[in-house]
Length: 344
Image 1 (tube, rainbow, N blue to C red):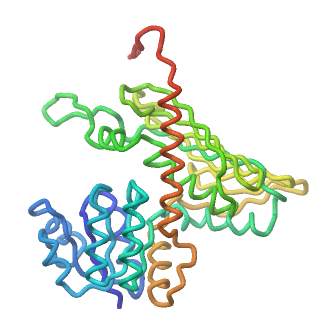
Image 2: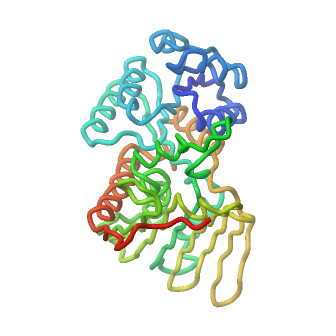
Image 3: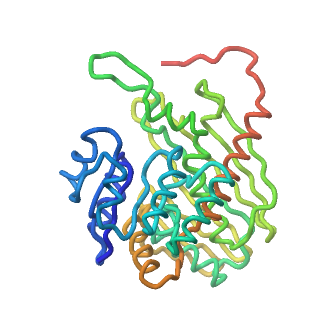
């Protein structure tokens, strides 16, 4: 049994990691750490394991691996502590923000002879796995264009504080200050494009739109040229319908090849191949699959073969592309000729 400890008891640990650990055979949730007093205890009351608010005590507990779900600013320190404790690491994206830190983390984990993987969970969706296989088999010929779109409202910029007062959502503010939608969400689509095609991005162009009032755009477009000659367009938004009473979202993958089209629509879990002979529909899936990721991580720990798990280089490359697209959008921003107005 692989004993896993979770570092950081926030939302992704609660809705993604802990349930997946419980559903994965051969893996158990042994401990959880959070520096906020009482947070780990509350987490383990719901999910099991021993709670810790002291990191030394956490790493003194018998563990084989840790899942790092803490804020990115402490990922570097968390990974170095895990290396010192000689445990395997699955780290949420972004693994870190600098190449220097990434290289130091890799060296430490290599010296400890333990795995360091990145939690780009979209790879493990059954839809993403099907698309990967179809591209390799050439079912739509050579892929020339990818359109990867995720337009949503990030649960709204404004929230009621419980007393009737409307305040800015801490979730919104935090993710915008960390870089906005391309850095937060677009890294998944960028990783998928590189992984599906097996082809590196050689040219990046970013553009943005500002509905909100942060330095980073809240709606970002990245146009990516690959070594293979294919082009990927990634379209990401935090402000799609965020002022609507009933906001909706758009989440699609489209791969256009010389012999057909692959289309995925998360709304309804629709996945299909359109070619010259017919349209073939297969069962779709959620865009995420934490259980599939943990099964792959369990297998990697047991065999030493990482399979489809993204390594640090894959995680860093996706983040750097997202950051560059966002930087270009900010640099090329055209100031509005008049103040924006919100129509209610």
